[in-house]
Image 1 (cartoon, one colour):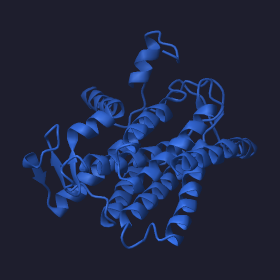
Image 2 (image 1 turned 120 degrees about the vertical axis):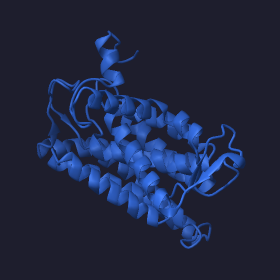
Image 3 (image 1 turned 90 degrees about the vertical axis):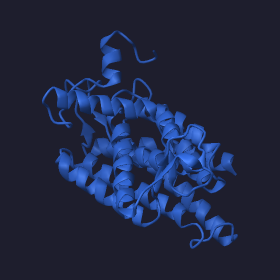
Image 4 (image 1 turned 90 degrees about the horizontal axis):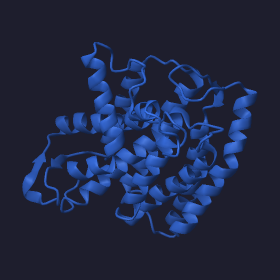
Length: 300
């Protein structure tokens, strides 16, 4: 079944990507080059649509089959539907940015936090943290609902933007997300494995067009979709390693799974604030910028 899910998602994204590219070119929806961006010519920035298409169509087909065969029920698997909802919401937020461009970053951040709170009310929650590497229950810190909302929202928004920020080189965000998704997909509950493998198939197909030299980029819609998926699945996966205490997340595991984007984001924010700039100040101080400046080519 997982092979079918991956294959079907791969094919949908593979076929839809050239279609999305042609439509975007006809409507002049292009990402223009500047001194911060690596591409030197205008490039289509709506690749997230093809990734989302492969992901959501595959999961909708799975849902129809699972519901009709009583393998899945809405009432007993609310969190599964919450994840689909969250993926759709963050994809749409990113798509709005891709279509309009230059939305005020504080407005965008407010919408992201509001969406995270909505997702929290539907069951995706960090109810506590475990500081133990092996997930033993005697080192747990349990949150109140208020702290849970704050912590969950900050984590989701943080990961979403961390993935968005590393999307600065061809294939980088997709490649790193693919590695993390593959790691989690073999260890989370079977129900959520379908979500992970659908996204793995879509990401693999998109990398065919997004690897250097890219003919299309995923844009905010794609990076937000991948970011929310990584945030939500890492919450579920790391909770399984705290003796099945629902929503108690092992920070060591989360940091391990998302090390590169999270460390890069924290380092960039701290550097900008230290230098007297806004955390949203555009610059070229991400890890991939530094490596490029030091002579590393794309393959390296």
